[in-house]
Amino acid sequence: MTETRTTTSHYEVQKKRRGDVLDYWKQNQRSIVRAEEVRLEDTPRRMRRGVMVSADGDRPSLVLDANVHQIDPGEVSTIHRHSWDAILFVVDGSGWSEVDGRRHEWRPWDTIYLPGWAWHRHGNEGGKPAKFASFSVQPMVELLGLAVVEDGGDTDFDQLPSRPATTESGLGADPYSNRLRRLEQASKEFAESRVLTSYDDVIFRVSPRGARSGFLVDSSIGHRTQGLTAVIHQLAPGLFQSRHRHGGEAWLFGVTGRGYSIIDDVRHDWGPGDLVIVDHWTWHQHFNASDSDIASLIRVHNFDTLYMGMSALLAPMSLFEEPPKLDAPDLTGVEWPDPAAGRPDA
Ligand SMILES: [Fe+2]
Ligand SMILES: [Fe+2]
Image 1 (cartoon, rainbow, N blue to C red):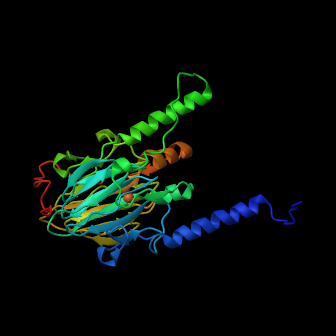
Image 2 (cartoon, rainbow, N blue to C red):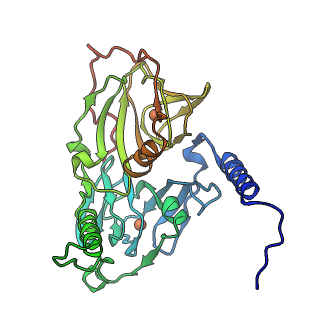
Image 3 (cartoon, rainbow, N blue to C red):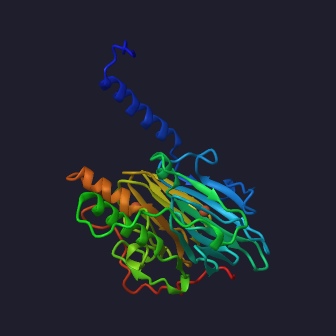
């Protein structure tokens, strides 16, 4: 027999737990991780990894993680798969990724999307180390108790087990068959997601918010993700994006040029390889610090599942706010340079 002797009700227990959780994550919150703070370390995958933000290093996070990876010329990594999905953004050098048996060649500023459970390995046949940043929803999947990673060493793709699959649904119209059919369909869509976004194919549009932006990973260009989206924003010389705030986090990774972000009145300068983390519900605005060159950053967040879900759960509260009149610059007449200005050679 187990007898509860405590006089504390569930109300006090939960209240304390809520407070502890907020305190813990507040302590871990940071607005910037600079490229030079990231230490690359050897791993058994034959790639070096540097933690920008992840419990794998000393900066735990709740939803997203961010790492940088380096692979030497002539090296091929082990093949592995995991239950979470990830975005890779190539910073330097060239190479290839084999994703579920298909090879994709990449060079600087190309983006690779790795669907959850897709077997993947990377190789570098170029003359210099290849470097990419990765962003994933590993922490969120771990929080749900569903984070699994499996390393397949040097095994060929066709010798490896196929992805965990939902049993075929048959023709029944009962609730169980309905569930099988729905999950079978979703798992097919994840498996067929777009993988490669070549930078040459990115379509840039000037937005009313004051930047020229292009989708890198998004459902509108053929991705099916666990919520991740990525865009590249280019800020015109001397100009800025409009101020706003929203729920969820937005992670920004410097690509080229120099800029700064003002987050709740604090200025954070950034350049290539720096990570700016916009915490939820903080007023923020991004600026180009140069009068002659563009400044680019990529923005990653968990929009399609977590943010949309929170919006629905918290309605009628709004998770997005901007001043009644957008404080964006007028970009008519701005002469934009070639979108590839500043792109490193492969
Ligand atoms: Fe991976
Ligand atoms: Fe934002």
